[in-house]
Structure formats: structure tokens, C-alpha cells
Image 1 (cartoon, one colour):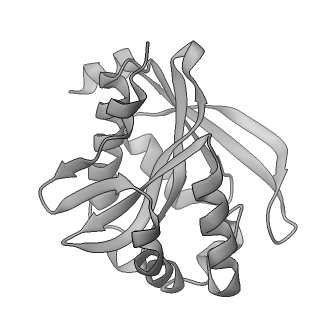
Image 2 (tube, one colour):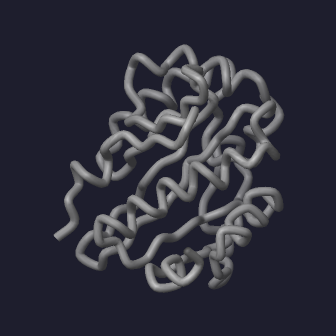
Length: 182
């Protein structure tokens, strides 16, 4: 049995803190999202400008999505978290990741994903998936650096906020694979 409370408890690593996304994070995340209005064209939803509040509220209201606010040195720099829970199969997805442009390429993403993966596998999850827009080469490279295996592409899997019909790459890491990397 997966202990959801333990899975969703705050995570820390030095100056990094992850805590469940809450109303208190709204303005910090809004500022982080506004720092890169161009990137939203390859995301399923638009969290810039007028799109921010409705998407923020919908994310928080979705019971199958449990994002963490990504906090570095006390400032919200983005979000990432668990979604698409299939606890009967001991599986979930890590996704919905956005990080402010100034933090990209600094190694923070790998540290954050390590925290999330360690927690998931430590709580009894045996399979973690990542679903990435095929246009997003940076995110695909990042999950492959973690040791994820690309399992295939879901063709025309969803329609994004701007009408783009998205092909989605599916990647996974199994508990034993992650343990072997440690």
C-alpha cells in the first residue's frame, strides 16, 4: 500500500525545498511563469498572462495531480510533481514541470527530479513515467539523463491550449533501474 501522506510530504536538499502547491505560492509561481512567455507554446496549458489564474486553480483542484512548488533560497522558481496516479499498479507520472529560465541548465532540475524519484520509489512506486511533447528536446534530454527509457510516441495524443495536436513521447524508469544508478 502506497502511503500518500509520505509521498506528498515536503522534500528538501540544501537550498531546494519542494512543498505541495498552495495558494501561498500563487504570486511567486506567476512571476516565474511570466519570465518565459514563449515557452508556453509547447505546453498543454498556458500559464502566462491571463491564462495563469484559471490554470493554477484547475491544477490545484485536480485530485489526480499533486504538484510541488519548487522553492530555491525561499523563492518560487517553478513547479513539478506527481500526476496520473495508478497506485493499484504502483505507478505514477512525474510532470507538469516548469522552471524559470534563469534556473535552467544549473543542475537544479536533476536535483529536483532525484528528490521526486527517490521519494516515489521509497514509498513503494515501482514505475515512474514522464510524458513529453515531442517538440520539447530539452525535456526529453533531461529525462534521458536521469536514466529514463523512451518507450514510444503516442501520436496525436492531445490538443494543447493553442490548438496544436501534440505527439507525446513516453519515458519510464523502473524502481530497480533507479536503485542500480545509486
